[in-house]
Image (cartoon, rainbow, N blue to C red):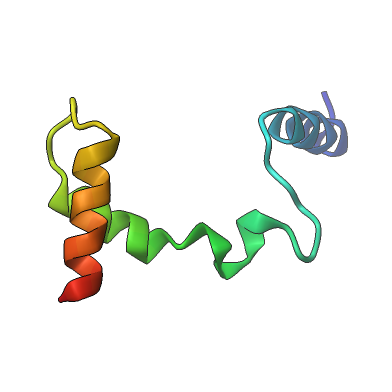
Length: 64
């Protein structure tokens, strides 16, 4: 497969998985908030944590 076809195929798969490559797409903008997600995951280290644990960690983080 030539490189252009491979790139097109990869973009098709990525688009099907929900990635966006538009200029204003979520994956290219601040809305993914990776720093905030990292901070949250550092505070909730239990792999079995539920919605309430995450909610509590967010509230505590915002209060700090």
